[in-house]
Image 1 (cartoon, protein in one colour):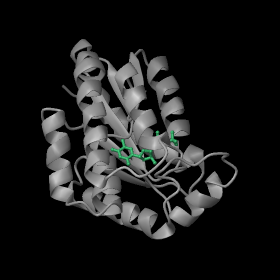
Image 2 (cartoon, helix red, strand yellow):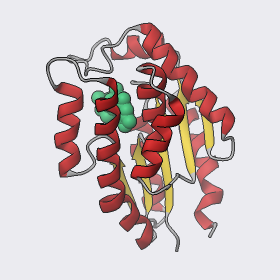
Image 3 (tube, helix red, strand yellow):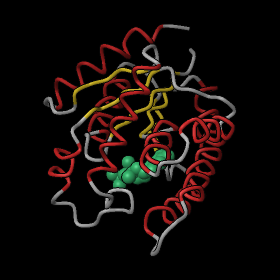
Length: 207
Ligand code: TYD
């Protein structure tokens, strides 16, 4: 059985965690071993990096931010994702390199191509078989998050930042239609889940 690498992307509060939980249950019931993981913070080293990049007081230079996410990614792919795929597991991952292109590229206004190449170098070119983009108007996302006690450094950015992030995601999806599935995350969670399952189903048997 070959491994399957699926990532979930989108703005904050688009529902990635809920969808991943449900997918994990569905895939497990079908007899697959699922590794549910995330970036930043899918390893011990990554947790330390996550703390540095999201919860540290004071500014972090945009290139330093991009490098910290890339370092987290390099270690995570080498120690968690690749071994899982080699075992034939399904890796369900909350955020991957498209997050860096969207947040550090479009959000922080670094060169998107450079940010992508940095991550591609970090992971030795590993791309997911499927990337689910949960697309949501950032203002709706903000309202969904309104009851959350603490925003991290990225969540605290203004609406224009989150609009740029959303546009960047949609551009990436349009450029790589074979890898991306775009789902309107304003729909109910059951509808969203069904759409994602339909896209994963044919990939389960594929070599
Ligand atoms: P996430 O874990 O999805 O947030 P939370 O668990 O708090 O809902 O992601 C943390 C933040 O990191 C999110 O605001 C997006 C940001 N991020 C980047 O800016 N670049 C990246 O490469 C990644 C993976 C995340």
